[in-house]
Structure formats: structure tokens, C-alpha cells
Length: 320
Image (cartoon, rainbow, N blue to C red):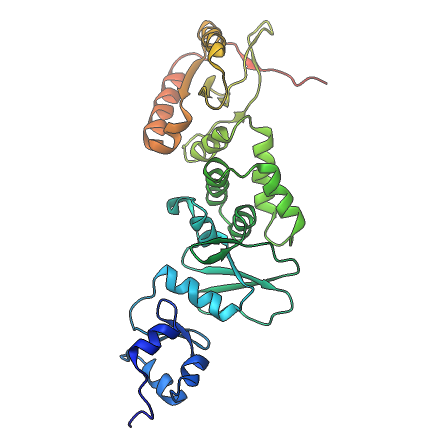
């Protein structure tokens, strides 16, 4: 069957964006709907990405092409949120889950449904988008919470928040406020993680908590005061294994101390040593650059602590 009309390739390129175009736009150029359908069949030169959205090539679409397709399908006021928005805000791909899907926000009055690789979320209040390279993005705080609400694994959600806080300059309070302002679906896990950020003394310690969960024997306590047999205060380690009296400190000038506090760190470690406590010190940067090495040190320290008699130290009772 002959096609009714062949549209010049240059006109197709000018009418599309990254090769993505609406089927109705092709029809307005004079192309018959049956021709469009036939070209999108297996082995044809084009492919259908979303309902009514065509890619003018038959290869695997790039992330950029899928994002354009999502926005064309969702409408003029739509914006990208979730992991793809976080990526375009500058977060690292390695820490972003769910990139196989594109997540868009649309106004509550719009009628669009999720399809193929696209997750459509209707919202009563659309945030003001941030435009990056011509793509409207939800602000980073909203994009991060939207991604976190769809996660079921604690480690993945924790790593996402760590990345957003450390590299994206989100503050935990803003993330929690965003969760409180929106839908409550899927917020239980993110809320628990963000509440821990407030209890911990730094984001580095949150990262340590995620890393420590991968040990055969993770720390039994976090940020608890330790005293000797006479009740003398020894320190408050970031991580603590009470069964073997092993302390883990995440030490860094950047996260905890000004330079003159170095003496206090030495004093603390001297108290630990005098009481028989084995202590492992880890730089926050190493939690990301060499997590395997940090875990190996902790495993070796735990074995050494377990092999020696446990010193007479204990967790301090909380003040009434």
C-alpha cells in the first residue's frame, strides 16, 4: 500500500523535538493515521513511545527523548520530578533509584494517566518549576521527596536523602516540611529517616548508619554516652557495639570540629584507650570513596574487640 503523502525529513525535524512528535502533529502535516500506525509497527522506521507520541526513529530512546515524550504527552504545565529531576539538579546518577521511569507532575484538573515508562502524578498545587536546559523541573526538595515516597528499601531512601543533603544543599527540615505539605502516601519510611537525621549530629553519621547496616553485626547503639565502672563519662561515639565495647567515630573538621577542637578529640581517644575501649575512626569522605575498606576495618576491629575481655564500661543512663 502506498502512503498518501511523504513528509519531507527536514519538515519532520523542524516539527519535532529530539525526534519526538505528537501523532496529531504528523496528521496536521498531511500524513495519514494508517501510515503513522504502520511506520510504528515492529521493523518500521518509527516507534510509539506513549499514547499519541511518536519517536521518529526505531532505536531505544534516550533519557532526554523519554523526558521530552513525557512532557509532550502530559501537557504544557507539566514538569519532571523524582529521580530524573534530581539528576538534572546535579545529584549523582549512582545514588538515584528508579531512573527506568520518568515521573511528571500535572495539575489536578488535567486528565492524564501513567503509561509505559511514565508515572503521572496529579497535584492540587504545582510548584514553580526550575528550568534546566529547557526542561521544567520540580524544585530539588520536591523532586527528592517525590522520589523517596516511591521507595520501599531503607538503604535506597537513606542514600537518596544523603545525596540531596550533602550535594544538593537541601536541609532536613525543608524535606520534612515538603512531606508534611503533600500527600501522605508513601511517607512513613522517609519520615522515619528524616527524623533520624535530626537525632544524629551530622549527615555523615547518617551515611555511616547506612553503611553500618551492611555489617554482619551492625552497631547496637548510636550516639549514646559511655561511662566507666565508676560512672565517669568517657565519650559519645557515633556507633557503639555494646557486646564488645567497640566505638566508631566519624571524625572530620568539616563535620564536627573547628581546628582548636583537635585536642578534645585526642583527649576523648585517650579516655577510650584508658578504659580498654577499641575505637575506629573514619573520615566522612571515606564512607563514600572507600566504603569497602571502611567496612573491612570495622569487621577486623569487631573481631579484635570480641577476642579480648570486655572492659567494665557501660551505656550511661539518660538524665531524667
